[in-house]
Length: 555
Image 1 (tube, rainbow, N blue to C red):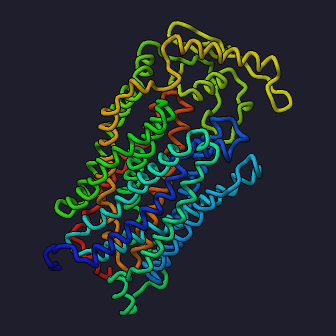
Image 2: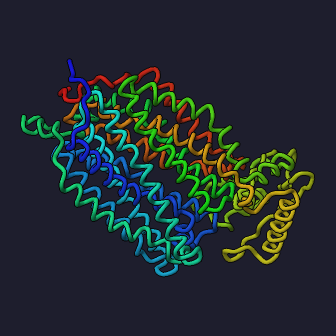
């Protein structure tokens, strides 16, 4: 089919992109606040657990929002294909913004006990449902307004919104921290970014009310060709289900893990593993986002010329090949004392087979880990100490070796839901001795601000963000182009949100549990590398290029 030559963007098209993008920025801002404040939320809402379990549980509560996203895609995707794009993703922002505001006024565990984390998780699930319907609506709406030959460039603006939403959340958090101070922020100031989102919600709703329905949907509705059963058409017919599966496993799964590695996991690694001051880490991530974000539009526009597939696959391949060296370089730049200590005095845990439990258990308490191996690994994990595992030739207590010094770990005895006095004294003495040995070997409690190489960190983080822009910039256009108009909202939303909600959203939790279990602080990187590598192979072999597809075609 012949297409008109690409033309300049009209005023109406600029308005569509601005309105869709701005509203989506606010939604992502709402969603990311929780991720950025996970450590504080762990203390406020999961105070009944030990620190490590509380943090894992806070990440799981964060992940709950991602787990339900595909269900939101089904609910709102169906509505979007039946009643229209505009009104469906107007509803999503109302649910999202309302849930976020309530988090800001929700009583903590100290006030209402176990009801607090339960309500928090329910709110996270509401947010996830709303976001499950948001992205497909925004991407479909913009793509159906874009002229042929410009869809990659136009939809790339939607792709910038996730990063801009994260950036906006970091700025609001940093500003609030600076104004009220760290102590007040940890106590009550963390609520402010959630509460002020109500203003952004009002702006977003007003903007979206002024928008018109997409021309593709309007034309289809006028001709009476809208789908009566989009779920059945999308997933009950093999010709469409096959494309849904290829979109998920050949594109989105890898895109998702690269996205979350390059932004969320990098921030988590800086603050929780390298112990870089959180304000400094947020500023460094914000700087990398400012530099890297324009590349969404660069790669989106480039995909209109050379294709979506080669750019996405190149980003996946680069991530697989360079994650380990990049995060290793991040350690040397962010906490050089830690890197030096690890090189000079390795930490090793030696334990007999079967003496170690699964360290990533999110509901475990301190007293659930009574074996000597568990007590040793738990303490090292809580202090973000990377270690190697060695199987002891015979049964006996686990030992921790730091350089040339070896310390035997005690066994815990639980009486009345707490360690008895003798056990507690032995465990405290063990922790004190390990702490002293780590200090003597040069292991720092936190990164020395004077030694943090900020320029190198920004360069590394920017490279990670550019990988994100390569895999994420062209993907909205590609997903829109893979499916017919009548079931587009539904069909593209589900693989996108399974990929980003499950493969990507669970990444911080899975990676943290992998590190806690294995001991090596880089071990969690195997998760995104394996997923990205599998997606690269499937995408290379089975996914076809889509840049020249006519999205107005009925089939």
